[in-house]
Amino acid sequence: MTRLLAGEPAVVTAGATVFEEALAAQAVRYEPVDWRPPIPGSENALAAVMADPRREGANAAAVERLLTSGPRLVDVLSARDALGIEPGTFFHAGPPTGWELASGPLRGALIGAALFEGLAEAPDKAEALFARPGRIVLDSCHHHGAVGPMAGVLSSSMWTFVVEDAEHGGRSYCSLNEGLGRVLRYGAYGAEVIERLRWMSAVLGPVLQASVRRHGPVDLKAIIAQALQMGDELHNRNRAATSLLIRELAADLVDCGAPTGQVAEVLRFVGGNDHFFLNLSMAAAKVAADAARNIPGSTMVVAIARNGTDFGVQVSGVPDRWFTAPAAVPDGLYFGGYSPADANPDIGDSTIMETFGVGGFAMAAAPAIVRFVGGEVPEALAATQAMYEITLAENPAFQIPILDFRGTPTGVDVTKIARTGILPAINTGIAGREAGTGQVGAGLVTPPPDVFVAALETLAAAVPPRQVA
Image 1: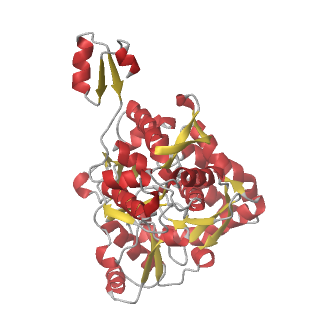
Image 2: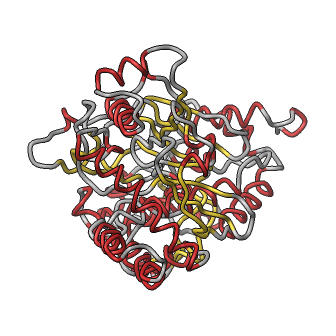
Image 3: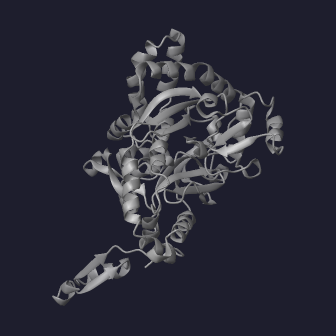
């Protein structure tokens, strides 16, 4: 206002782009203010939460725990040994759901897992097994410190990475990556899928276990940081990270005592699967986000996940509650013969990467990602730059060269989402709608704003009345 009284500028514009352009054409002095209205319906809850004196301290504590986490690969175990999963129990991606509400790719993955476990002899027998009340236990991976890409199904005989937080002591788990295309996590369950799972259980898991135990803990945070410098964003591009992992473990793979032929098979499989490190980066993000859970007053998001039907988030200040809304179909590039009509709504736990400040939040580090998910390079840069507006910090360990080594935007804040209307940028694979199809493309997806408004309302209800302005 002082500047206005002093004679410059003559006009302040707030969000009126057309008006601003007209003023510029007339050479009128003006001051632009980048203002956006809050998400409709969030105003009262936003005011209450913003007035909570616990919020700033709670968010500082939450983001500090996220940033200081030290994820390390410490073992590779069967899901039975790691998580106590017994035959007939299956974990899946996203918020909890049941067979009757399960999407096509989730049903396909469950059918495949039942065939793999020997619980059914044919797909129709597996479907009947899941449809029969009380015979099968389904639960969310997140409820057990685990995450799963796409359908995210974990069953007793599958093998998992075991990741430990060296700083805060937590543990997380994720399955081993199968590769792209017709794979279980995309809902395929043909003979080649089951055969691959059996080889992973008999060879890949045990050989990796022997090599990791011989090597000792593998610093995943260091690999992620280096991979960002090499063109990965760690969600849909993991080429550099996978190569760095092979380099780290190669000598121990050779010396782990496994038969030479099996070591060669493992190296050939991992080397031919650019997405192999994704599951490790997911477990690293999970253990880091879990370290920031359950801090009263914190508005930081600690989980973003989808099960193919529902899109859900969890927030640090609301212990273990899911806020859900219908998942949308991603917008992206489709493989030959497929179109959006073949696509299932968004699915998978891999959006845990965005809570960690990578994935869609780090697309500026991986401009080549647009060849896989669509769009243009400037859009990848703009996506990362927009995420600084809805996050609490910049991660000093994860730097983006093209942004002058600025740290990635980290710590999604529901109040900033509500205030700006900017939603998290997420890149993802696209699963076929029909069970058994597999992957049909990859693209970008926008979360439903309702989940953040619902989280904000619950946070507002938890603010002690005397602390509401």
